[in-house]
Image (cartoon, rainbow, N blue to C red; front, side, top):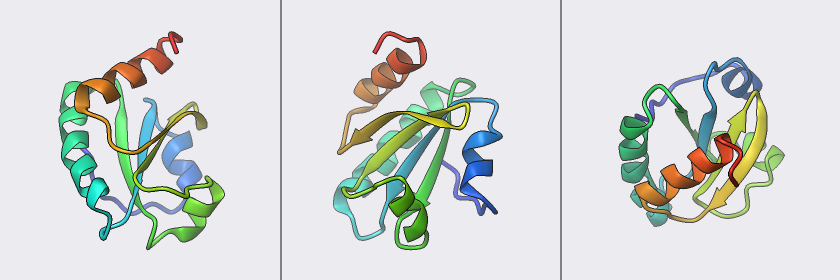
Length: 109
């Protein structure tokens, strides 16, 4: 499940995680982002123990969005070992997202 949490440093959030981190860059006013929020809850439940999901509000953290070249919402960036390994723009179904994430993490993509 995606949990809203405060963090001191984005690098700490993605770099210190033991699991890969899927970061959902979103904004409250974004309709497709609201659809993705529900899908991410499902993905989090199905991938529990494999993946951590974090949400970054681009309105509250514009510098982080800019640093990661976020120009479209929703955009999800998959980090492994603190480094971005995949970038997904737009809405995917839970099954599509899980398949893509597992493919990247297993080296199949």
